Image (tube, rainbow, N blue to C red):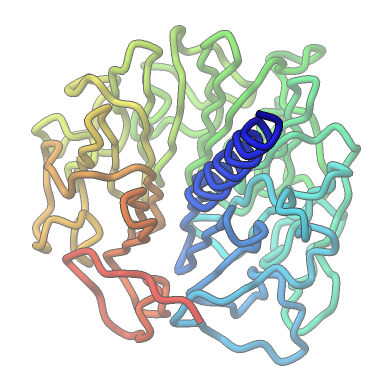
Amino acid sequence: MALLQQNKVSFLISFFTVCLIVLSAHADPILRAGMNTSYIVKKDDQSYTWGFGRNTRDQMFLNYQTQQSQYTRGRKVMSACGNCHSDKGNGIRDIAPSKYMSHTLVYGPQSGLVRGHGDNTYGQLGNDLTTDNTNVHDIGNFELSDNAIGCAAASGYSSFVIQSDGTVLAAGRNNYGQLGDGTTTTRKEMVHVKIDATTNLTNVKAVSSGLYHTLFVTNDGNLYVCGRNNHKQLGYNIPDQPYATLAGTGINKVAAGAYHSVILSNDGYVSTAGYGYYGQLANGSTADAYWTCWLDNVIDIDAGGYFSMCLTSSKVLHTAGRNDKGQLGDGTTSNKVWWTVARTNVDLIAAGYDHSLIWQRDGNTFFTCGNNIYGQCGTGTSGNYYTTWQTVQFE
């Protein structure tokens, strides 16, 4: 009897060990796409970050004195990010590449360190400099307080960091008030985003920025906007906003394109506003528009430069907008003014400036499409583009 019990215990331990190994092997990765770059944090590979695409500003944190200008297959990057990686697999928590310029923020170490690398023309790395860091070690690495909880590299030469108290720090270009600090003054050091002259914006859980406008969503579902509104990208008929201004409620996620905005409500409806020339608002028109809603049962969204992506609860990927490089993934280069099915059985999505990145849990496979001029699709080649989904290759 004792031997039988021991065998049962041994079997259960082995069974649960196998289950844990299987589960860890399929842990969801982090996908991010920027301007001519792509990043994948593979949780089943000790949280190393794999990058592919352009690296002329050392936005991949490699700290090479003479940097390789591009990587056409996924390779391990972030070697200059100090303790951003961990042998225990709990290193990088988020990575945020700019979709329009050449800088990247990464948040990962247990100490709460947020680091920036790449283009620093307008001080967007928050280190009180405007020095370009090509061929220079450590320019652009900065440490915030230990309560930083996440980051988002804004696109128009600016950066944002969310802190654990729900406030947001911002730095970089601010010519239309896109930093939300109440001014149009460029900031080389981090400043707080505010709702008025004396009150910080608080309780923020996510931020996304286009070229000159920024969207914030709070934990209680409030949408705040700031910056330029020349194409209705703030969603309402209001002037440019130098402060974060309340613009909606019941919101779960936000995504900013160059001049358009995509939001996802708590009940699964996706709405779009702003510049519509390429059909990126997915409302059947190419005119600029305030908020319009045309799809439900949505669980995730993202926005590229001039295109939009959304993922439904049935794992169907829909895309709309500019498609000159095949970034919509529908096998054509024709722009789409309505949401168009681009692929099924999709679990994660990411939009770059003019390329797309997705992950399929079945088979643990990554796919890309769109512009591949610098190898940002990770297929082993460069100088081309793809209208259909290609499998990412790793070194």
